[in-house]
Image (cartoon, rainbow, N blue to C red; front, side):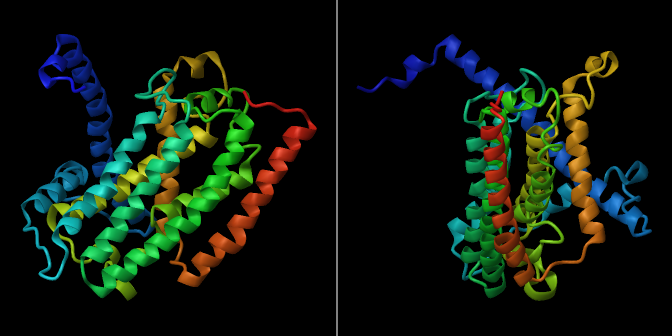
Length: 341
């Protein structure tokens, strides 16, 4: 039995839809702004580390540079190679950007401040964050060019390799907290953040998110010395901008996941009347900023890995190490009768 569309257009349904749209925009619009100024922060921080000035000409202290870059990309011509598969070529950048936005639906910014507080939040995050690889693979294949195709194959192998160790790392957090709900995981860290008892897994997770987001020293899919620009070599204008935004949005997303799983989310470092009076969103933002600084620090200081080193680290080091730690955590909880919160 079909329900006529007009019967759904009640005042209550329209108000509910408007409220949902307002909530989504409240998350996505600041996120776009954060992505734009993360590029500015990266250029300034790396410039300071390498004794360079960085952007300083557009606006006061160079603060208008991200806006100038966005306007420039908007007005450039979109060029589609004659041999490319046009529909997949256009869809690919969207498939990279959209999952990076969708994942924020379950990230708790503060106690009760979450768009969808679902019980399987961790599973949702793992599923959504894995979709982005399809955009990369489709972009390399649809370009009908050798360098983008090789970059896409590299990226696919790299992301799959490090998602395995990331998944095992997240399982140790689930074991300790006894829940897959992200709010419950944060609340289970009231006495101690999980980065303390799970410090080796925290380090593995940090390294894995560098590889997962194709960031230095694991930026092999975009290795300009071998692959020009990797999987997006044939893209220009706004499709290229979507890849660019997707990369930086994924960096912020992975930093948010790290803050929630290992660094207590919105919880303060220590529970004191002064720290407890500070809004939880401030502590969450501070932790995300710290992990983002680690991203930029790694790019400024570490040389790029060879591809065989990257695969060896993922499959021969991280996989057995995370499996061992998962067994140790599970056995310790069984022996000492520990039960997740």
